[in-house]
Length: 426
Image 1: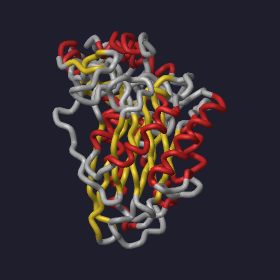
Image 2 (image 1 turned 30 degrees about the vertical axis):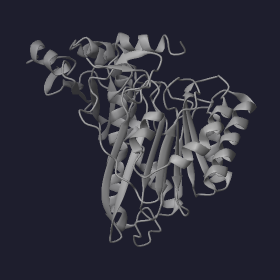
Image 3 (image 1 turned 120 degrees about the vertical axis):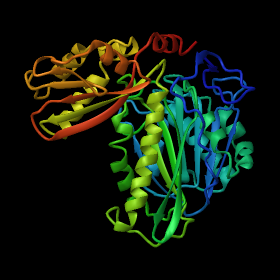
C-alpha cells in the first residue's frame, strides 16, 4: 500500500509520522477550477511541521458575503470565537488557516494571537481585520506561535492565484491522508454558478455543526442571511451526520463564501424557488466533503452507512443511528469482518429511545440477519460476512414503531487509530 506521511503535502515534504493512505481514498482527485473573485496560496510557517506547507490564505474580492456554523463545544478555540464575532458584519475579504496548532485552550494569549494574525492579514490584503476569517487545527493547549504565521502572510498573500485550490487543501491537513475537495455547478437566477469546496478532518470527528475545518466558496450573488439559512439547513444531513470516533472538536468550523461575481438575479430568501437547484448542488458538495472525512477516518479500513427507519420520530432515529455508528463493538466487528449483529442489537437497546425487541429487524447490506427478536430464519453467515467485508456497506435497522428515519456514516475502528493518536504529539 502507498505510504503517506502525516500531513504530507507534496513529494518533497518531510513531515513527522508515517501512516498509510486510506484504502477508501479517491482514485483521482477532483480538480477545482478557478472561481471568479477568489485567489489562494499556501506557505510554510513552521507552526509545528517542518518542510511542508502549513498556512493557507484565500483572498476574496470586495463585496463577498459569508456565513458560518461552528462547534458547540464549551471549550471552543480562539479562531472560532473570532469568526463568530466577525460574522455580524457579514462580509469577507480574506481567510487564513494554519495546521499544526489548534489555538484552543490557550487563554487570553490565544485570542491575542488570533487578533495578530487577522491584523497582519488585513494589512497584506488591504481590508479591515473583521473582514478576515481564520481557523486553526492541530494540537490543543499549546500557545500559537502567531509570529511565525504573521511573518509569512505578506509573501503568501502575494502568491495568491485563482488555480491553487489543491495547495490550499493540502496545507490544512494534519492526520489526513489525502486532500478533500468537491465541486458542482448550478443554475441560479438565469446564470450558471460555480461551487468549490475543500475540507480537512480524519480524527476527533463527531461534528456538532460541521467538520473539523471546511470551506465552501461560490460565485453566486447571495445575501449573508440567505447563505446562513442555507448552510444551517445543509449541514444537518451532511457534516452533522458523520462520526469517526464520537469526539467533537474544539475547532469545528464550516464557512461559506459568496463572491457575487456570477451576476444572477437577486435572491432575498432561502425559500425562493430560484434557489432550488443551487440548494441541491450545495448540499451535494457538503455531503461529498463530509463523506471524504469518514473515508479518511484515522486508521479506517472501511466505511459504512447506518440507516434507521421505523423509529418513533426522526430525532429518535438519529440518536439510535449514532449509537450504532459510535459503538466500539460495532466498529471493531466491522474491522474484523465479523457479521456480529448482536452488537447492533445492543447499540439499539442502549440508545435510550423507544424500541421493541420483538419488532426489530436488522440487515447487513442486503442480508436480513435479525428479525422479530431472534436470528432471521434464512440467516446465512457466509453471505452476511461477505457484506461486512466490503470496503463500503450499510447497516440497516427497522424498529417498526413509527415513521422516524435517519442515516449517518462512519468508519470501522482498527489498531491504526491507536497508532495515530497514541503518538499524536510525538
